Length: 251
Length: 316
Image (cartoon, rainbow over all chains, first blue to last red; front, side, top):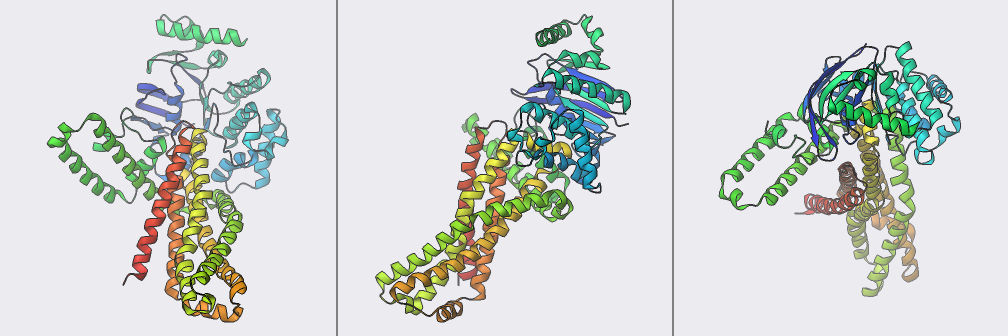
């Protein structure tokens, strides 16, 4: 079971967001939510943890390897353990959907037979009720909801031990949201997968094992959703209220 | 340390995320000595600015401009080293990069054949027409073959091919990579552990180099044949005799300089276009700005390289 440790992560970028001195150990077969006021973009922390963005200072250790400093021979093995689901974009535009899904598989598992890879892709397409006709299309020709599901499927394909989701339910219609939500909760029950997410919807925070609350870029407190609803912290109360309102509007 | 506190902190740095990654890679790899040599010189240089009266007289804005230029220079050096390193490890990721290389050759080489041939035949014809206007019977004089070899083979073949490639593929590469940054496609590659340089930049460099070298050979051949075709209207020359006279004027040195030029033009054009494309940060409005810079810098680099190689080969 893989572990992510953040040590004194600090990041500041105008208009993007800030993180101040965040240290935490993410481990176990859990779903963990990162929650902040909607105007604060805590997803930048997710990107730092994924090794996509470099922090201003601090370290991110994945199984004791610093993902921002690891050399190229080590980084490939590390990345195989972790997948990132983008909120928007992230699908290579000059490749077809099938080529997009083959890319991480060919990179990490070149030894797998092509047929086996194709079967795995088709299994997930079937699971999320996506027509196989999309496989030959370019990302520009598919609906953003399908692109989002392709993003999620691409993350699952490499069978990672850690999945980082940037707003996994955003932009999805109700039926698709249910499928993704169901799969996330199923993963916790069936596999040893650590799932960390940022979401604009309260329903994932509700099922999360733990939620970490941020205010002004600092970690304020942590707890399950019920605990946060009863929290005495003014900032937490404000955040929870915001998310509950969003949830009510969506409902 | 100087870098860490001044340029790597999010507050002051103008680097894109990829620039930081390239720079970090540079730090951890074989060129570390060279980098520290450059940093040491720059450290003393900037310290000397700080200690002198110049700094007091310089406004904050000017200092910022100097820092920006310095940031750009460090990014460019890091990028070049990253590219050079990934060129030698290209074979390790060929299972995913080969398709990018093939598509680049198809777009840059194959699809440009028509325009290259048209331009080459026209240039060959123009030389004949202009020459004949000045000197009647020009196609039968020895100077014609001299001019054709020196102008077309040594210079125009690679130069015009490079210009066409910069206009077609240089802009396309910069725009494509810039849009990929905006659409977080580069982030996606990083999240898989795929280096954007080895997957996107190196195949494009190989593709453009192969295409320019091949197209410039086509250009030379087409210009020679075009000149012969047009000469048929003024003073017909027997094709075997014509080719014999052309090849007797052509030396190994001419061919070598032509190939070297094509090779270096291709490398420069593709590297600059990729570099500028990856300099896009967040907004799609940056894409055309970087594309313009890619074209201007590529043209400048090609002209300078042409001068350098010509001087190296023919200045005596």
